[in-house]
Length: 461
Image (cartoon, rainbow, N blue to C red; front, top):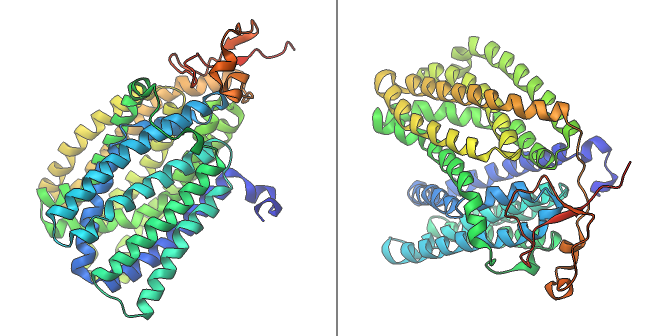
């Protein structure tokens, strides 16, 4: 069905954006039903546990997920990426198992909460497999996977509502349906990408972990920056935390386009396809400029809008919301540039930058909240996002200069080394003189037989 759509609708960006919009809409309806049926106490307990587990299990892969998502874009690294995927799955699975046992034994309603780690686990695996599919040029699986994983959950919540199921039983229905449907979608993508043939912990796991350390630092930085509302509540009070959280939630959907564009551009950067990268960069610059102008216009009428939409009691959110709009524009540009830098092989800079920004975040946000309440915390976020943008631009100049001055490198076909995968067949065969090391492959990447990855020399023009 997707193959019959117009070309512009079948583009990677259109498919990814469509999948995320549809997924967000279905998820919002599902959460509204879940919150109403579960009642505040069970739903609040679930939300708190889910938030903590998302951080813990998300960091347990030690940055391997982000590394695999980047390297899977290179055809010569697909076999390596399949093995590395199972390493991160094993690390996250062990963490989920430990969390499951701990919640079951040491918390109230442990039998229900023990399911939450597995929900987090399968959702992380879905995000990883979708990133791999996009890197491999299979963006069409995005919409199908989202529908397979989200629609059954919505149907289950509607059935629970019709059956008048409430409290913790509806949480059990939600968790079991989410785990089953998401796992089905993940397995379908794994089969589609031929990843199931490499099940098991790879022998070169030490090499994989050594390459993922900078990705771990940048992931940890992102996780720290998700604790902003908690920091505001700690430094000020619960009321100011609410005045900060409302603007943060309102501006969240505004980043749907730039996050989709960032996910799409990373594989092209890694493959060295300069024309696509420059095209997407121009689109991103235009979007950021247009949204910045729109944010400036909206800021003028914010008091009236807040009064109409949220009520007079939320008028103190006007100041934080204005700062958040400016911070969002800076973050859109900064995250895009940072992703391009990381995909171009500068993950060490991105990791160090993320660590420095996380340290500033845990200092400036509470300080701003303590001095000027929610508005001060929002201004602190604006400053940090601005610093990320400025520092990223300083490094991005050299990266984009290489794209402009160098010849575009199109992805090459995989070598016989990756295609056969049989070490016995390779034994005793001298390496062809026409095979040269791929400049896109860093030192230390090896195939399943332990030999360096190579590609055929391009035929003479």
